Length: 179
Image (cartoon, rainbow, N blue to C red):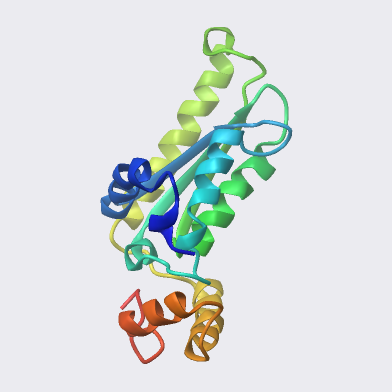
C-alpha cells in the first residue's frame, strides 16, 4: 500500500499537505443514490493508505472535521456517514455533520426558510468548532481501534512497510499520536 505508487500521487500532494496543515477538515458532497458522489468516493478511496490499519498521519489525531451534505430529498445521513467513516479511520477525533434537505436542485430556488436553516446549522457548528479548537483528543473508540492496530502492527502487520512505519513512529512501543 505505497501511496507514492499511485498514478495520482503527485496530483494529490497539495491537497494532502493542506489537510495535514489545517486545523479543520471540511468534506462535502451532495447526495447521490444515498451516498457520496463518485468524485468524493474516489478521493476517499485514494486515502486508504492513511487509515489506522496502514499508515495514519499523526496530525489527524488532533483535528476537527465537518461533513456537509445536501439533497433535494433524503440521504444526508448515509452520505455524511461515508465521509465520517474515513475521517474516523484517519484518526480525526471530532467530526460534526450538517445534512440539509434543500428541496431544490440549484441554489437559486432554495427557499428563504431553508437558507435560514442552513445558516443556523452552520453558525451552531462553527461555535462548537471554535469552542473546541485546540482541545480535541481521541475518544475511547479511536484509542481502542488504535490499540488493536498497534497489536497487529507489533506482530508484523498486514504488510512489512506498514509495520515498519508504525515502529518508526514509536507506536508499537509507548508513544501515541495524540500525546
